[in-house]
Length: 419
Ligand code: UD1
Image 1 (cartoon, rainbow, N blue to C red):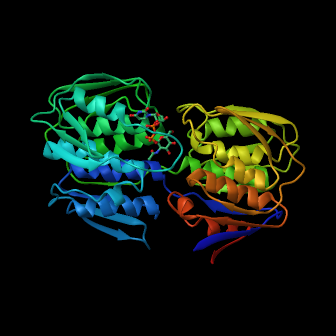
Image 2 (tube, protein in one colour):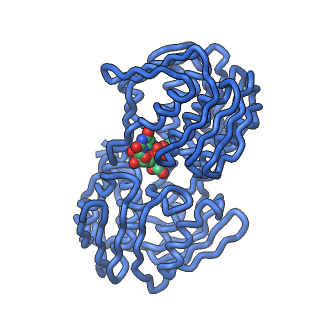
C-alpha cells in the first residue's frame, strides 16, 4: 500500500505551478456528451477522478484518448450509446452523477447508480432531480438506481433551495437542447460554473449569466466541437498558500486567478500572512507572527469548504483560539482526530471546531479520510517536528496532481513509499 512520508519542520522556498481545476474538468468532460463532434481539453490535470469519469464515458462507447505527456484529452462522442456504468465505478465519486443531465439531453433517458464520493456527509441529489423533473423528466429511484425518462425536454423556471454546484451544472447541461428558455434562480456562482458555460458556449450553446445567481439557458438544436483549457485549480492554489503559512515560509505560486482565491487571500491576510499578486502568480510570505481567526464556510464567493481542513491544520499552529464553522457539510471534521494525533488541540461542537494553537505539531502515523483532509495532513506533516506517515492516500490522488513532487520541488522532505 502506498503511503506518504514527510520529515517536517523544514522551510519551503521557490516556485510551484498549479494545475487545471478538477472541479472544472469533471463537468466539462460530462458536457462533452452533448456533442457528437470532437472536443479537445488542453492542460488537463491527470487525476484519478478524471480517469474515472473518462472510464465511465468509455463504457458509453466514447472514444477518449488521454495524452498524459501533453496533458491533452481528446473526446469523440460520435458513437455514444446508452449503457449502464457499473455501480462500483459510479460510486467512486459523486461527480459521476453529472453525466445524468447531458445523457438525458442526448438520449431522452438514462439509468445510473446513486453516486458516492468523499465521505463528508449525506450529500443528497434531490436538487438535481427536482431540476430535471421541472424540465419534463420522469424520475424513478429503485434498488439504488436513478432512472430518468423524457419524451421532450422543455425549458422551465427553476428555483434552487440551495445554490448547489452539481445541481446547477446538471440542470444547465440537461437544458442545452430543451425547447425554449430555462432559468435557474439561486444558482451556484462558482468559477467552475462559469468555465462550464464558457465550454458549452464555445460549442454553440446559449448559456447566459453564469457566475451570477440567475442563469438563463436558451435551447439550441446542436453543438459543434471545440478546444478548451479549463481554469486553474483554486483549491490547489489555496493549499499551497496555506503551505507557505504553516511552514512560515515564502513561496511563489504560479497559475492562479486572484479573483478566484479572494476569500482565501482575505482570510490569510487577516491572519497577518503577507500576500502579493503579480499577473497569474501570487507570492505568499508566512514568516510572520500569525494571528488566530474565525472561519465560516459558505457557497462562493464565501470561504470554500474545500479549504476548511487545510485552514484547520494551519490554525492548529497559530497561538490563540480560532473557531471554524462548517455550514456546507454535516460531517466534514474527520481530519480532527488525525490532527489531534499530531498534538493539535481541537474541540468539536456540532458544526463548529474550536482550535487552540499549540507551540508545535509532532509527526505521527495518520490516515486520510477524504481528499481535502489528506491535503491538511500533508500540510500538518510539513510543519510538524519529526516524521509523519500518511495512509489511505488514494483520496489525495483523486484531486491533487503529483502532490509530493510539487512539494519536493519547493524544498519539502516528502516521499511516496510502498509499504
Ligand atoms: C462541489 C465540488 C466539491 C465542493 C462542493 C461545495 C465538484 C466536482 N465538487 O460538489 O468539491 O465541496 O461543490 O463547494 O465540483 N445538496 C443537497 N441536495 C442536492 C445537492 C446538494 O442537499 O441535490 C447539498 C449537499 O449535501 C451539500 C451542499 O448541498 O451539503 C453542497 O453541495 P453541492 O454544491 O451540490 O456540491 P457538489 O456539487 O457535490
